[in-house]
Length: 401
Image (cartoon, rainbow, N blue to C red):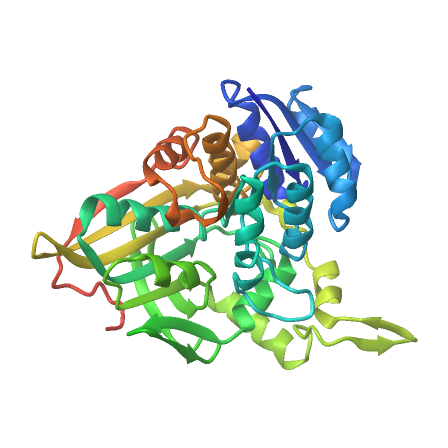
């Protein structure tokens, strides 16, 4: 059995720890490390001694590699900040163990979501004989695997994909983000972008809206965003003509965000206050509720999935693959709300795939490049079952054509 090291002690890290500790057939030891060890210790207390903890500065590859060697870790799961992806990849290369993350690298001073920095590690991981698995959350992650499953089992070619992410949970607060505020707000305030007919098409932030009827949730306003999985999926799906990403936001959320943007609070350009430079968005993050605190407050469901349109044996087909998750059930099990749960379960399951030898190979992999079947079986068994529904291929389900 393997030793897994989890870097990061936020809401997602908590879920990864809970789930890895449930996988006694895969992991002999589960470790967690963070800059603030007390956060790890609090999660360890929830798990009754099953989790071992350490302190580490994830920005320092040599320090992280030293920790990996000292505890004998076999796999590293990065659920820290995406700013730290490259330093943790460097640490894994130095120590010679596989790397897993849930979000692509983002430079602190450039609001971009691109894989180019991590794809540049391809040769180094190949030469080291170890894998780096990118984006093993839900989206990216499980949605990539829904695409891989559809391509493997349901279609000869997939022409159109719409990824639909709905969080219908209500925490009762005037304004809060369900994951890291810096990443969340940078993502939403950026221009939208989707891939069609071999090129990228840009839109203004939140310019495109559709009202989609989510199973078990109902109709919710959904806005077109650029999301990182589009970059890899546009390269790896046969016959693709268009792929888009949609996410739900309430009118109240949009109103708050608009005001904050209008007064400059979402800017990442430093300003000087009383001789001290600070990014407005960094200050906003400090005054907003900690996403990890939303668990006991959030009620309702999430629904995340993909609608596929393509051909099988010359016949046009349309399928909807999705998961519905209940915030209250997630909190009862792991002390985290569903947004953290839907990210943490897949990350733990990706580690399970490597620990049990179900995924093999060396190099840098996006999720859809790996076998979806054992992964989706594990994700279902550990809390995120999915549904596959065949749809009327002639109906657009209120999605813009």
